[in-house]
Length: 326
View 1 (cartoon, rainbow, N blue to C red):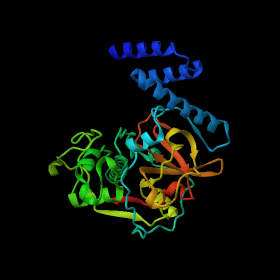
View 2: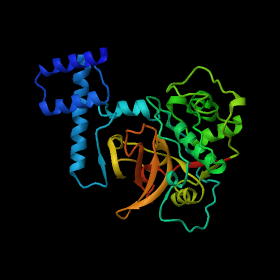
View 3: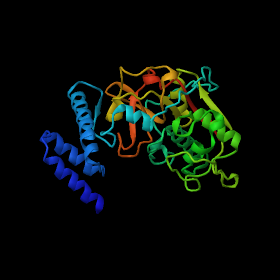
């Protein structure tokens, strides 16, 4: 109730100033939708950022593009703030240039979606303001691989990886790689469930892993050779979802639907800054795409998912992909 009164007071006070009426209406509506409350100084700072983001979204959507943008929970943030809050701040050594995954000879179906094959993919989760996407890519992949083998889909603990996997060149909320997280789980002999080791969106001072509560295990890590996008397709088509990393640039922050493609991003492993999970692939209007599970909540993108162009190593997505054997 108090938050509602404060929000109303700020909105009433803001109306006394000469702000663009239509823009302010959109901003007020967005604030109400996302439960935002600002001080008076913050209100005008965020209104200016929101206005610039909306201008960019409208300009993009008026053009001829394969994907559309929309306002979302990040629309009051600059990309610099967004990057600091959600993406890796530590460079990752994505160095598996020669992987150990051997592709089958196919043939491969025209489309695959592991969400439709059975109960093999957990609900979209939300990493919050922590660069822990790598842990969500890891758990998402291990959850699916384990479910495909055992028939049991169990949400696993990202927090254990945030708190405990530093010896494998991971950095908690500052970044890490799924391949290195799989290595940690293999040598640690287990990963606990989400329920037993719940997510907090910050790194604790101590690791509280309990071996007797381990619920998922890794026997080996399969790294797909750098840039071998057909190898990725083979794995997704014949085996299971695959963890991947790519470079997020400013336009992706506003992604809404369609097949994402970019001329801004790079294709090399040293530039990737976000890890996600490929759960399938398909074709739309002659455009091949990956179906990818993100970790920014189900209100972002296509119910928490996005499509990204397949076959051109878009934004480095084929630079460092992997999955575990269980």
